[in-house]
Length: 132
Image (cartoon, rainbow, N blue to C red):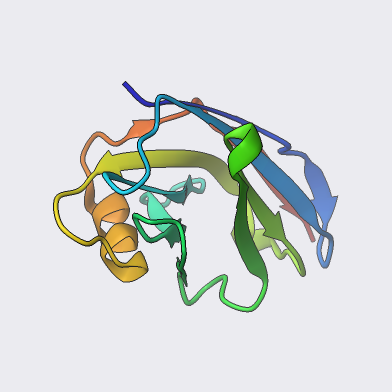
């Protein structure tokens, strides 16, 4: 079973940057989708970004496009979320998540699957707070 553990959350000022990390274990590339989700105060869970099942492509939510970047270090089984130009609406518990997929699994497919999954495999989360 996939296991995920996030780190890197912090409190920053508006306009600041952060890098979140997620160590992933027992993950089989090509059969699972990996990505980031977040849940802010009094808000429903929302997708942030995802990789295609083969890890070659990425997909971003409109709210973060151009500001956030996901990447991965396969040698260290680690996924990253680089966040820049943060604003108070980015305040949330961020967690990395994985779901199994049958089929090709484009980045958009993976993003939608992760966002809609009722119980994705996920880490405990790391808190990001952006002060105005």
